[in-house]
Every structure is written in C-alpha cells, then in structure tokens.
Amino acid sequence: MAYCTNCKNKWKIRDVWRLSFSKKGKVCPHCSVRQYVSFKGREPLFGLGYFLMPIAIVIIIFFPFCMKLSDKEEDLL
Image (tube, rainbow, N blue to C red; front, side, top):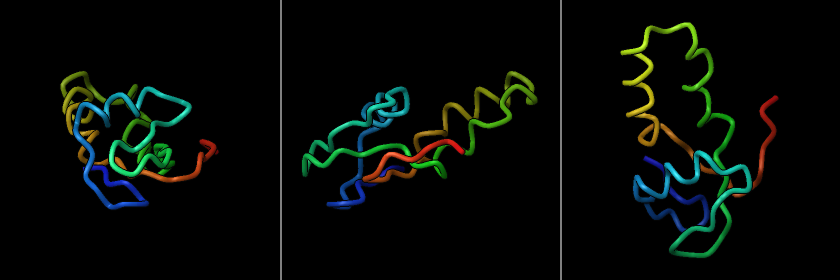
C-alpha cells in the first residue's frame, strides 16, 4: 500500500486510485504535502498490452498495494 513520504501515514485505496490518474499529484490528507506516483510505482503498468486480459485485471486490482509515493514529480524516462 502507499505511504506518504513525509508523514508516513497509509493512504486509503480510494485516494491511491485518484492519485494514479492525476499527473499533478495529490495533497496528503494528513500533512498537506503534495505526493506524486514515483516511477517505481508505475512499473507494474508497463507492458500490460502483452498480458492476457485476466492477468491485466489482476494487476490493476493489486496496483494500489504496490504503489510507492514521492514528494517530487518524476519523469517517466
């Protein structure tokens, strides 16, 4: 699961999903520091096109539990 890099509080799954679709990051509900999805947290999404649909669905369901946060915005490459 995702934890804030500043206050170390665990994020709710709903907030993690919202963050995963945001390019501008999201403010931590506990300490108000903006958090971004780190490049390492996006690794499970690379190559989804090569998997069969059931495997892709399982990865998407478990994505919030594998996500890591960063207090800095990172480029994909």
